[in-house]
Image 1 (cartoon, rainbow, N blue to C red):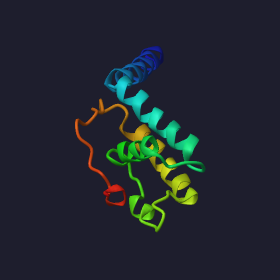
Image 2 (image 1 turned 120 degrees about the horizontal axis):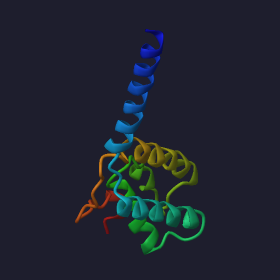
Image 3 (image 1 turned 180 degrees about the vertical axis):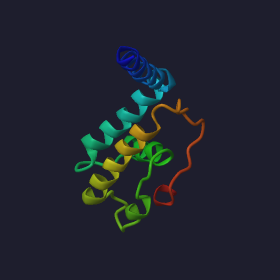
Image 4 (image 1 turned 30 degrees about the vertical axis):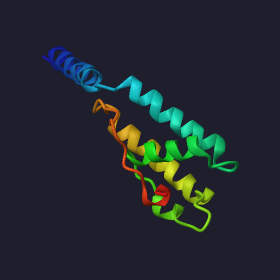
Length: 116
C-alpha cells in the first residue's frame, strides 16, 4: 500500500511539472524585441537620448510600468535613479507575463514627455 501511495505522489508531482511547462506560451519575437529595447536603454542612459533611445522608452512604456512622468524635466532626460527602479519593474513585469503569449502592438502610445 505504501509503494502505491509513493507512486501516486510521484505521478501527481510529475504531472504538475509537465503541465506547467506546457502552459507557458512565451512569444520569442516579443522577448527578443523587448530585451533589445532594454539593452538600447542600458547602453545610452548616461550618454545620449537620441531618437532610438526615445523609441525604446516608448516601446517599453507601452507594456511595462515606466515612470514617464519623471522624464518631464526641463531637459526631457531619463534620470538614472528612476531608470534603475524602472528597469527592475520591467524585468519583474516580463517574468510575470511571459507565459501569456505577449503580442507586439501595431501602434504605441507616446508618453506626454515625448510629444513635441
